[in-house]
Amino acid sequence: HGFDEFVGESREMQKVYRRIIQVAATDSTVLITGESGTGKEVAARAIHKHSSRRDQPFVAVDCTALAENLLESELFGHVKGSFTGAMQTKMGLLMVADGGTLFLDEVSNISLSTQAKLLRVLQERQVTPIGGTQPVSFNIHLVAATNRNLKTMVAEGKFREDLFFRLNIIPLELPPLRERKGDIPLLIRHFMNKFVEEVGKDVRGISPDAMHFLENYSYPGNVRELVNTIERAVVLCEGDVI
Picture 1: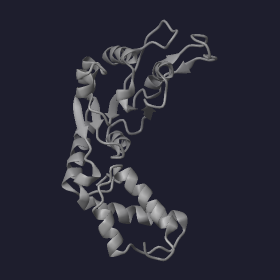
Picture 2: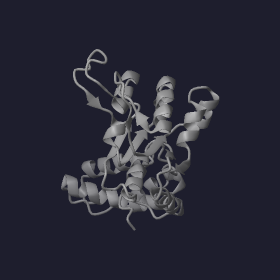
Picture 3: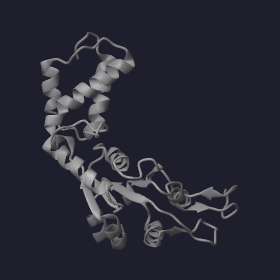
Picture 4: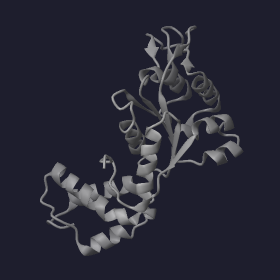
């Protein structure tokens, strides 16, 4: 109930739902882990939706998509003229998310120097824009995610141990699809119906052989791979049965 973002009734997913309800009731920092394609942003949005901050902003930052200098500017903001290309003052996403939830996706990709700055900002709950002089307070629920083992990265000197402890207050691990195979038929039917409606084709079902194959595949790309597979099957289906 209330988890329309997810498709799954398995015991593994029930654990995920219970943990989301628990952490949504607090402002404790959450670290979501899991393989690529398991739905980490979906889980982060569910935490926000079930929290008292649900009517405030949910701001997602993909830490892999921005260069180091751009990531700092995105997070902390900058004042006009603070660096080449800073044509106007820009509010950082920490302030954009004020009152709501900030989701740092693939936090393992943040450089060590930016990690140090982020740790200080999170501890002080104040941010000073690049080129600015006055710190500004903010109030966010921080949710971070990664598909990498941060403990290993800490041991290798690639991730700050103090930041890891700051992020890993409440861990939430998402199971890979191969560990919740009972959910695969539900996912197949859900996404088949979705793409049938979107594409406008008269596909009414899936053959037993095709279902058997899909149920026993390992899905290294997890739910994302299953979604793409079902979309392709619907688009290329020449009859009314996949």
